[in-house]
Image (tube, one colour):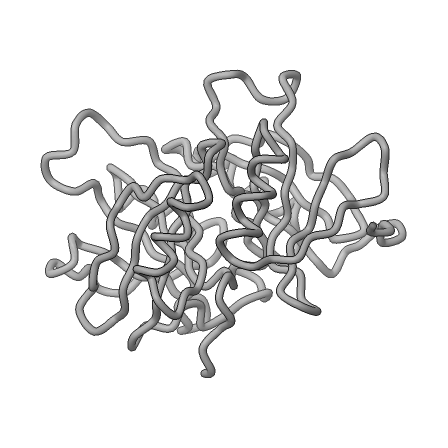
Length: 265
């Protein structure tokens, strides 16, 4: 597989205090199976769909204070993780975890934009990222949710060289970042009506499903909670969910579309 361009979303993982519970939930909702946990790398456990790597789950590191909040983290491709870490600082962000080598799998760091959005950077070695995308049970899209869109827009374009376009709609401030022809990331504004002040800015991960309504029902049966939807859109029928440990994610059936694609400017 050729390496992805810098700034391309290439991987996602989440930390859970109850790993077996997380495996059971995502197995029920997204049809994932799981490999052996890697004790050498903090019991990092890869998830698979149809035998292809799609995500990973990991328990908290020993000595972490309190119970860390479960959340999905999106990783962007980089040819040089140390150089990207420097760009994060120069663009007004923070490096939460300094660049580190992960065996021969690759190198990573964790960053935070000036509005509080946490994300990862991945310089691939033998692990190049998603082995399946856009199909049921795999990553398909992501959106930055922030209360300070201008700051977030400036940061992500400076760090990853994104181009950006805004949906031509006076009622909605929604921006799409791209690397040439292909859109790679969306950006939504968190309004006070929809997002209580205690919910930090974050990146919403969208996983593809064959049937949005059935995925929501499966999530609720397995102890998850529906936050929004299901709702039809030109991009697909989607819903926002919380898993039983509080990690936010979304499901979308990209084949079931309603309405015309919006104009961009």
